[in-house]
Length: 317
Ligand code: NDP
Ligand code: OXD
Image (cartoon, rainbow, N blue to C red):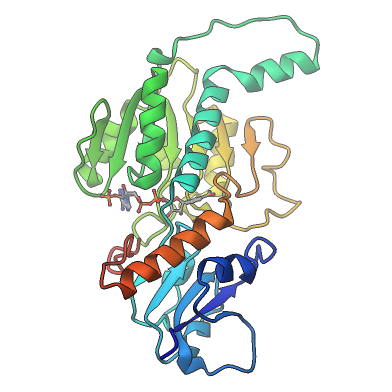
């Protein structure tokens, strides 16, 4: 009997996700790049997806597993017709380390006053400012999961005081851990640089708002607290971020994600002097690492093993 086929439902980034890379690692099964004809949807056992259209997955009556080709599953969770089969998200070192690089880069950029120094260079102004040691700054990471933990580890090694906030209680050596709504206030109060690596769920939507920013450390050595968001755009209230940058509630922001992507040319974020903007590429991942990850998980499952990194649909991540 032939092995269940793998359907690829990929909208956006299609160049990266050529079917060949899945065929290379799934040699003994059919790989079908959708939309396609000339196959029986009943033969499809697995789907690897990136932003499939709502309802698209319901076409496969014998689907066994959905593999999301990214770490965040918010777009899938919004599809009420999503088949009730295990949903696996990406957790691979390649992605985790790239996100770590992004977070470390942006924390250091603000810590080392790069915005000020570049403006000084542009105006030929030789005016060094006092440089605090890393140990004077407290970095608070919202989301102590796969990505947050790795970033915390490296920031700690550099010498920052690192705290993390999660839904459930966690213990991480050298990281001050806070959890749930009771832990949010003490976590924010000691935070100079806030890093958001949260998933987008009903509980976290718009969590990055004025009320939250106002509770960050008001006596930060940086002058005002800094926001770094690489989670999802809908975690943030963008009007609040702009107003808080303008009135000094926030000193600066690094934003990789936006409520509307691509960010429209009319957005004030593009030209804001206190904003460092990247086009949702904090952790672009080597597609080969992800296709190998999908193939390994399928082989593991068919050998009687368990799937890894299965999304808890009740929690939404
Ligand atoms: P994980 O599921 O491993 O970790 C999520 C963390 O968030 C966990 O610590 C979890 O708590 C915490 N969390 C979830 N809900 C809440 C809540 N209501 N209150 C407090 N803490 C909460 O996810 P990853 O680390 O792999 O990825 C995080 C997100 O990063 C993704 O969902 C995605 O949106 C984004 N991302 C962005 C990319 C980019 O390029 N910009 C690339 C990849 C991912 P607990 O530990 O208790 O479960
Ligand atoms: C992801 C992303 O979720 O790229 O992996 O944003």
